[in-house]
Length: 290
Image (cartoon, rainbow, N blue to C red; front, side, top):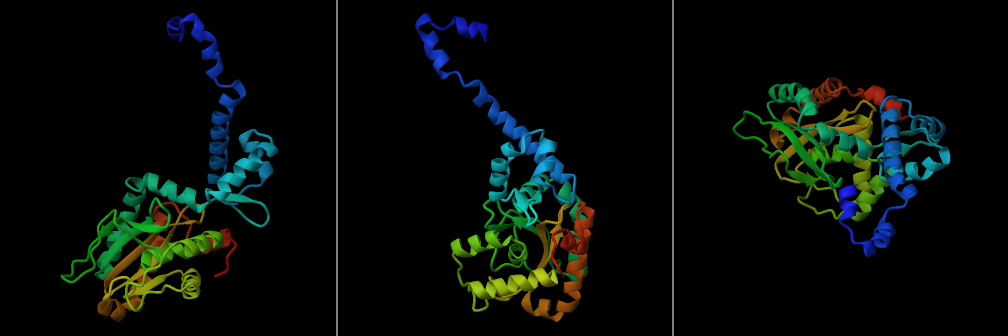
């Protein structure tokens, strides 16, 4: 830095001082980043969530300085806050975390269950998650059916949430405010006569999915194609991905009962293999009833 300062002309010295960042301001950015990571690391280490006081201790910061930070993280859905005031890792953070490992550990660990599901059902099996816009679903991995007539997708392909089986599964576990925002702002096209587009009918369907733990579609986006999907949970009980099968509607209807059980079992196997909490445990952790 000394060499650089010697290059300045004398008349530029005051100008250089004028643009030098304020000491307190220059520290506030890195300090906030450090506190955010302390909060996230602490919440990742516990399933019980944490109070403002506990987070203040973990971040070595006054409670008053964390209020705005926590409010911002909650608004962006990196955190969630329950009625008692406890904070938990939120769906957006879990989605980002899953994306960070989606090409490595997560998919590698989930692959055996994905392959096994395709083999047992004879249908194309897919792992899907929220896209980076958070209002679409994207396909992360697949094992295609060996049948000559089969459902085919491309890894990285993006589809709608409200009318695809993986999308509806993920949508069912949105927080109420997030779901309301999506339904209010997202235009819903009727692809077939079976496509659900009304707000009330979509909400009723999502409640059923959340209650039963499985999503179903039949001819909703593509005529003649049906699907089943189950949730993959993170280690904090958040739904971070959907495990699905899809195939010709006639074949899917004929094997519906058997395939539903296989999808549920495979989704639970994926959750376990990737270090997540199983369905019953996650429901308890989120304070839901089956």
